[in-house]
Image (cartoon, rainbow, N blue to C red; front, side):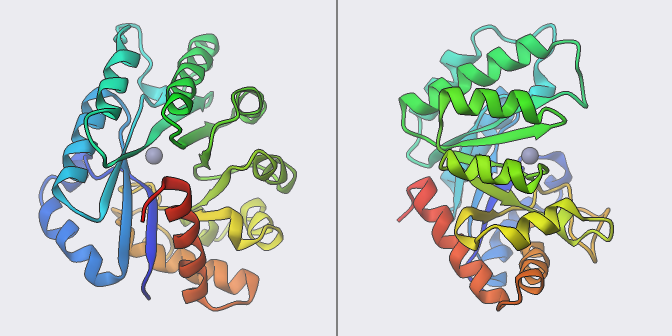
Length: 256
Ligand SMILES: [Zn+2]
């Protein structure tokens, strides 16, 4: 398989400390043609930009993940993110940002503010966002509808109805390893119902490895299994899944 474009991974993660360079040099030989590596706080956003500067096929997203909005959170985060956006041509998105009410639901107001502020930053530079939405569908949709960014709802976990709403906003559905899980149901319906033209592929590496690697450390070469599952659901060729989603990603992230 070729033309695997990974739109969401975390290659700064310590899970890759032992063999990061070896792995990142090997992935292009396994059909991976592009990767967006996403930050989750200021430190990992800096690391994402460094990786993007080092490898020609890697691009960076910078942002504060909702799980990292804590009491001693840096008030200056927006200015620091903006500086990072301007620091490299390889920064192609703001992310990973969003709402996570599973992780924490006692700071919803702060999560919403930080999410909305980062969307504003993305809109200012005409950059797409990588959105994390866990058990927060209603508030996520409300913010996306009012701010109207370009981007991806990563690891999409909503209903077919919500998928239609996301697409109506001009955003893409991020489809990852969950679709291969035995108990996957709603996401299978979403993949069956929605056209390939509104999907991008992703892993969330080092997490969310598809079957047959579920529970193991994930890397972008495993997208092959997700593409095969999507192809099976839609009764099309797996290479076509990669070709179309690659072209969706290049268009969205402005990559030539
Ligand atoms: Zn992620």
